[in-house]
Image 1 (cartoon, rainbow, N blue to C red):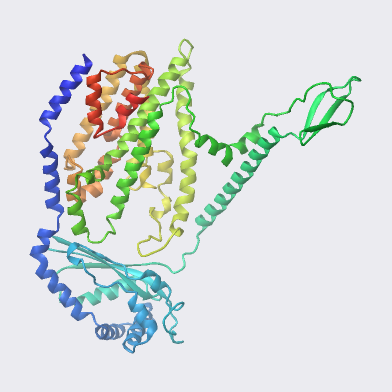
Image 2: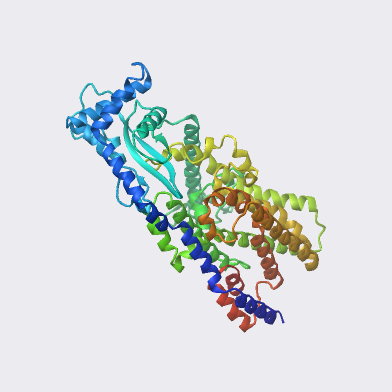
Length: 597
């Protein structure tokens, strides 16, 4: 009965859901984000702009401009020192001195692909940093400054065509970002452009000093590594001593005096009396202190983590879904974060949008839902089994629920705290380069937001510490709500079903209201054509909010309940199985578990 009903509903859905509806949206998005029509109308303007810039950007022009600018300031002003050093570079280049030519060679240059939005010209970062160390020529003694790498970012708009360009600069370290902002602003006035441009300069420090937080993090990490090493050595020694005891007790001799044997190369030499019984090995159980050290042993923990043994009741298919889902998440993020620095995006992106294989990347947003499904499934399945194990016993519900919540918090929070302690202060020192953010990716190094992450409420704030932990916040909030659904479901499927359906319906209503209020498109593809909603409202008001994301978790609870009721031995109608495998062509999460557990 249920199988036939499911098949009829599936056929109705397939009949009404035509394939063209999705690809009509895709074609609409392509036309919105494609730059080709806009470039055709703007090509003459763009060509004229770059011709004018090319004629204006000469060494003589810059040298004259800097001399005029220097006359406006006093000799002791910081900007005057900056201008003097810039003038030295340009005048030396006009004289053909090798070191100054190397400085200019490290600058970013106007390159091909401008019309295809190839907006980044980082220059030669390492060459700029090596001025004075591996220079082609000797630097004169009167040159006292050191070169630093900066990036000039220019943003503007020409009609409906957005303009954004980043340009690598090799600048004396005597120039501050404010000095360079002023110089660039004055320089743009000399260009005969009829468009508004907003420039700003970001410079990287030549030597990034370790601050107090970084030092504290390294000291803590050093102690932690030492603890791991000591624990692993103790673990291996205990295992070796247990298998190869040097001294082993024997029973008493005929005169009642205990005697011992010394074990050497599998031979035993009595120290007192003669042996009368077999050897009894001593394997003392570890005490609390030793258990503490064993908790940090690489050997014992690695052995457990890498073990492929299955215990009774293990849902092995869940691990496979985790692997596929994590691969999908990584793939989507690699493409998403790479779009900011990729060249020729105006050519590349409209091209890949036409590929059906690329839809898995464009729709990678839903890959996280797989983990919500798994989380709900496992919580329901394990909690229902625990309730059955305690059936007939008097349950102290306050203690039971408190232990349920505490175990989860204690399991997740210490690793999260350790990650925050190491990642936030030390990540800026991990690398360098033209696109590296020396200040780190966390605003204010999480000084004001760390507690939100520790309480798993960071998804309700616009500024987050380690923004990806929005998932942990949602998962913890779902976990807190789960007993309200699962415990009634254990005693009555109708009451539990009504509560779960109420949560699901509330999620639908909340999502609809939020989408309508902020004018969020229904398709994630359409978000690409509306960067404002994609960058702000879509993420902050919808994507990370628990009342919009709880749906997959509720589905996981439902299927966890089904696995519990069938003892993971669900038998399906063959026709239904065929339809489900057809569905697996698109989504493989839930029914792989049902078919293989």
